[in-house]
Image (cartoon, rainbow, N blue to C red; front, side, top):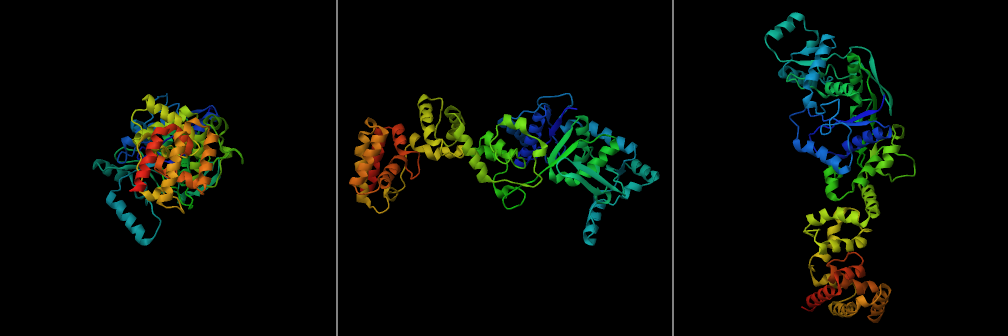
Length: 488
């Protein structure tokens, strides 16, 4: 049987790193086995359903360039792929368990269940349903039916013995049946299925061969095996993925930093870097290779390369990855990815404008080695696109210098700029070094006031290259403004 896997998110919030990792592992496993990758939307929790979150699922994977073979917006013979459109199926299979006496109707009211929880809390006994309706007589059931009492359908957990889930990564996981959530609800009184029923019916009907999901579902694994047995179905192969932790050893959350994919996009991470780094959270091809293209991961991914231990999400490492990927981009590609950030920050208004386009392409060689995030671009190049403001004359004055010394430095550099374009890069460096010697200062002290005068900041792309792009006329004008500020 060919491999069929699914990613089944609930549209209740933005796509986060943990969910993305699950999706990628399923996707790469399918591709490496010439299998099928399915998107199924588990939207049965209508109180928390968020239409924007559903759209975010589609937008996230469109941005990543990850496509599913079957799903809500592409179709497939096992649809529908929205659980909210499959309610009739869940009722049918819940009723089949009733008929086979693997399940029963529970008429307990919310008030009774609340009182039960309060009693268990006071007595410090184990929480869970007390199976009150499991042994209702047929007469009592008939009475309840005549009264029109609402009911849920509960699954009968065996009262003795144990159940084993085999995990492809972790091996056999055995749980005593008495320790399994006692008689969980399969179908609610409003006809909505719980996760336990819905996903098993769907996985079976969609012929899912492997379920790769988060380790938080391990404790529910034996329950799911019992449900498969009750239906008389063969369960898929399970693989519970290692957890993703922050560097403090706690489960990754917002307190550690960005967790939604949308946040990483907004900060200027490349999809190639994000996919590569996230794919290494719990998986490694060998001890040496870190950089993988999507095409390589589609060929190389396998379950036997997964790690049982939790993976640590290192934001600095991801940023380093991103910087490496930025430096590999062709200038035209990098410019295209930078333009939205330049537009967002008001640096450019119409990148189709030939003048802005020329300036963007000219600045790429200056900044490409300095960028770790696409969002780093605006502060670095603002001075080339907009007029600058120097906060105060103290920003212009080097250490061990005063106003008069700084004025002299800028006047000398102004003279050098006048013939800047007539000299080669090497000749310009010689000329500036010679001037620094004449002023009895280091080259850095000579260039610092010039840098601030030209760029408005102490940190900028290479100064000489920046002056070439800005032009000597604008450069001289900015030096003169700086001199006026110092002479006030």
